[in-house]
Image (cartoon, rainbow, N blue to C red; front, side, top):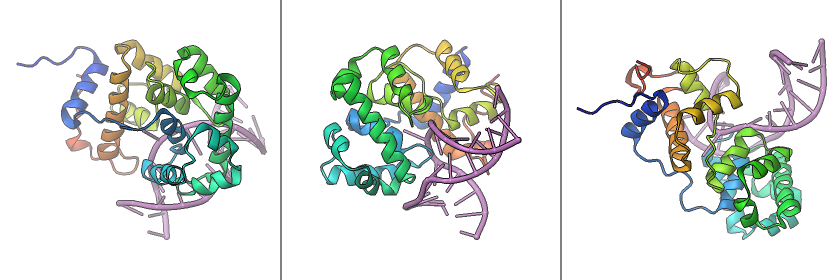
Amino acid sequence: MKQENNNLFLRVYDRLHSYYGSQGWWPGETPLEMMVGAVLTQNTSWGNVEKALGNLKNAGHLSVSNLLEMEQEQLAEYIRPSGYYNIKARRLKNLLQMISDKYEGELTYFLKDSLEESRENLLKVKGVGPETADAILLYAAEKPVFVIDTYTHRVFSRHQLVEEDTDYFTLQQEFMDNLPEDPVLFNEFHALIVAVAKEFCKKAKPRCSDCPLQRVEE
DNA sequence: CACCAGGCAAGTA
DNA sequence: TACTTGCATGGT
């Protein structure tokens, strides 16, 4: 007889992992592609982001130096399919400029920097908020940071596992206080939350009856 | 047709 | 401080 975990957050993880299996998010991509993708996916579906990334890759411009040298207007054209292309072109420029200013333009230096320093530097970039910063830290730099997004908040509050009106930092602390500090686990868990949200926890029409998380709180 | 998608910053009161 | 609005393409 398999015993359920006594930690609520791990129990949720076990349920989701049993239901969906490993997700392997952003497989086979470079850290730079994940960084750029993290900005492009702001309030945007990943499918559209892939088209934009494809444009940059096909043109051979997915490098720190090329993106920095490119005119912002031209960058905007490449990333057009991901929406908000003018504002995101500016945000990408800001982000890459920070890598240039603080890390000699060497992405590997940034990736090896401490969690505290790199997070601080990311949050100072105009256009990089807490979720984008943490997504870059977790998925590109493999730092042990739990990424919170609207799905995380929606799934956990709908199941009454967290307070409805909690903020980003509080929710993130709650996850990190209750989970082992493991980037691989954080990566999988976040992806699993997105999966269950898309299938069962949509904003308009949730299908709660078959949800793998029903009665997980007991 | 309406609504949504792995946010963020700027403006308003 | 606490809302509100602009940003924009593409899929369902």
